Image (cartoon, rainbow, N blue to C red; front, side, top):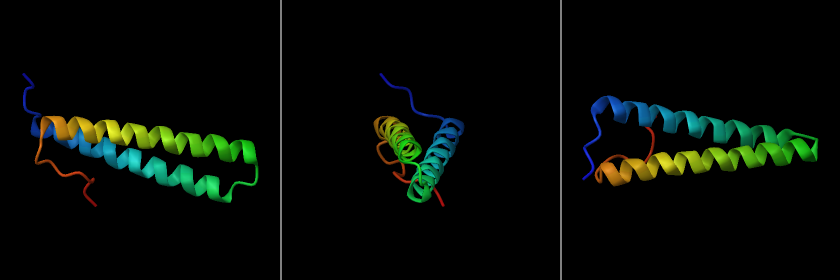
Length: 74
């Protein structure tokens, strides 16, 4: 049986999701202006890694809190 997530844990998860979202955007922005194709590929890969992290955090929220928000708070 899963124990409910505490308010503090929800804050940590929301903060982590916001951080991952920011990293996705920064990697994508840097990749879009990068002239070196190898670096661009690394940046695009890192954006995908951070998207996977974001999805993992979202899945954790959805499993533990069915009514939890699905987007980080702006």
